[in-house]
Image (cartoon, rainbow over all chains, first blue to last red; front, side):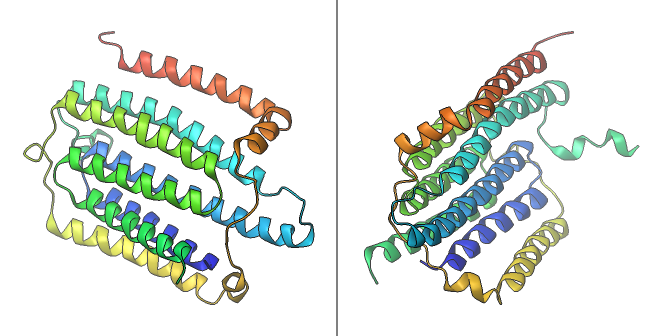
Length: 111
Length: 167
């Protein structure tokens, strides 16, 4: 597949995530949209690594390339898992304090 | 049209459709289930790109662990379509227009990138196998790997401290 199809797919997923963050008011759904954007970027990273590995493979058929990018994506997943645990703890605490997950109630900084 | 192309289009349509359903579902539980569909589609893409290890990790970590955590939190709070916060219709339209404009800008910026379009992504290579990845992870990247364990420990402590009752 041409690389630009992968770019368009990742852009579509990322934009849907952005639109979700802007339109939804439920804190959990907003968090899920952020996860979706993270995954779109991961997919694009793997596609680009594959693209570059291919040019290296054409020059030297026995070379193993593209490992670094996949490890990078692996570390992104590690950080995302840590981020989700802390974020969900914050949402649970927010629900305990204001009995809602509506982000519109969190406007104390505005006043 | 060979099998790779058919799979690519099927997985892409599944991913985009799942993402749209995730954003538009009124019930948060359905949103979580659609997001799991999206993650499975992205895992399929990883397999098409010869990143088998990442595909399995994506299913285990995202679809397995993170989304179950989301489901637990949603069921703990007893959220459903009735408790879903309502908001202004115009703000919704503005959000959709903003997201669509972002997509338009990206596509317009990438449309004339001729060099990229010529490059094909195909099967082949063994970079995604667990043997190759593991060897690199435990030799060249052993320090980031160990530091990520510290990150996990701090995240665990942080989650417990934040979620603790009273204080």
